[in-house]
Image (cartoon, rainbow, N blue to C red; front, side, top):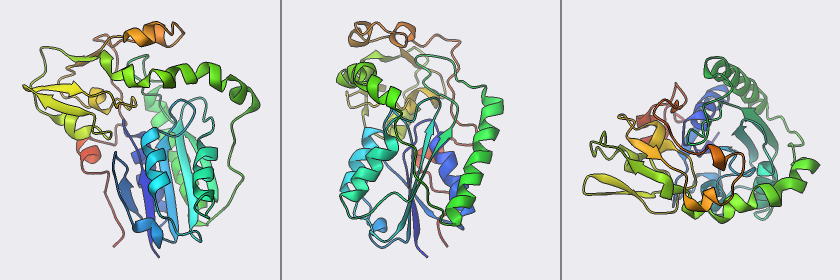
Length: 280
């Protein structure tokens, strides 16, 4: 029985969930979604999964673009897990709408609370030593339900969140192309090129032994948290300073800030497309 899980992950929470769920459903091919990823596996797969974080109360643009291009078996059992910390927003609605355009539907959708990892704005929370095992247990539980091909009415954006969306999120989306203007490197940078290899948006190139960000960043922060020298720093871009809200007033990356990534996921896991135990 052909099973495929499409996963987008920056700091590893979604990849960790994908691996746990793949194991619970008896094995699945994990395809790591990056810019320009192509796949024909879903065309005749009997199980199709999507696992990704929530960005700006929706699915990441990279995952959205990929799903819109994807050819899926309309008769497949399709599930989605969204890793988040506070608000899952309209992520499941977005994916279901994309699938319905293809004659398919989202059979099962669940949000999975994980450690927040936006290190350019705040310390990771909830406390990782407690939250990571909790997330793993929840992922395993969801995996068992998916293995039984359970269906549900996926959670939709709440009325309050829907009312706030335009005011709270649209300003961030309007300046997202400015986000990576905040990145720079310290003298600790050794020009190893790991950040270029990690970037799922293919947004980083090396120039003179140092990374250059090319303004198609969606803020996954893989380059920051996996840098072996902690050489990538951040200062608030001017466009974000002008927003002047709770988050932007706290943007920056002091030396003591924890650069969290899921402790079970290494930089090489991200670079190698997340594959661990594909179908035999």
